[in-house]
Image (cartoon, rainbow, N blue to C red; front, side):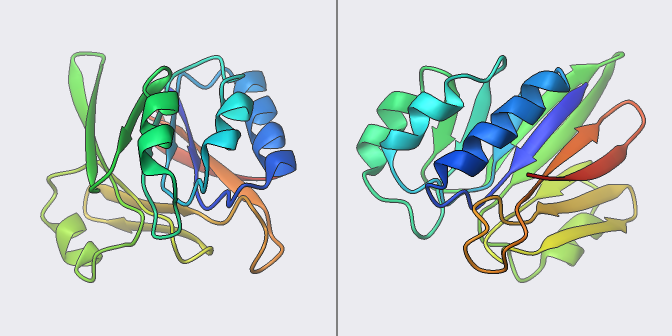
Length: 167
């Protein structure tokens, strides 16, 4: 299964549109957003995805009730991260946990081996690490406001390949 990962869009509509275009072109089957969506006006852009989207709130998100109302039409949005999500593929359960702000003990959490993927945002910097059987991913900032590098990630759960894509 191909999964799109995005974070820290910070209401950059042009970047959101490009990410949606990439995810749709790649036939991504599910998207995780690791927070800092900002406001409900982003929904009309993410609504063009050809798949569900599951989001967690970030530290800068406002209008949370309206965000919940909008995004519940396309998937889910979790107010108190983390979001735990399981996918069944080839008779195997693949376990995800998604945060906005990474917990201080993220590598210890990974070493427990409870999750196949730990996804986080907040730092606006790409990260890809393997700890035991767990892959830790930060897709970087898609909004591009802090460091100017606008990126998303795509994960192939069959091959376990993670690819960062520029917007």
